[in-house]
Amino acid sequence: HVQLVESGGGSVQAGGSLRLSCAYRGYFACTKEMSWYRQVPGKEREFVSAIDDIRRTRYADSVKGRFTISRDNVAQTVYLQMDGLTPDDTGTYYCKTERCAYWGQGTQVTVS
Image (cartoon, rainbow, N blue to C red; front, top):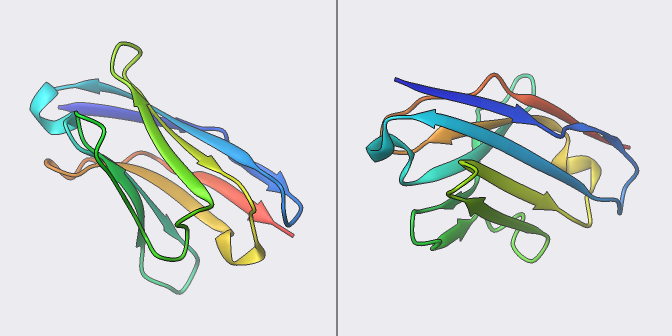
């Protein structure tokens, strides 16, 4: 079993920044690779970024160069630093364990 708790969402103007956090607890094998997804109403949830236990990272093309994923294995937290935000980044952001498919409750990001 894995628990994921996201935080850090909010409202920001275009060009601004936000930092999301995902605190994870649970089975180590499930949390080796952690990821962020986002979803807007009426659309499918889409991949944003992922990081594995040795900090190899992946990004969706739409966020490359603007978003940075990182993790603190001692604090058991994954971060998503989002810079240069645009209205297209608006959505609910979810943390996920890639290996065991646990999802967090989501945190809302609104860019105007």
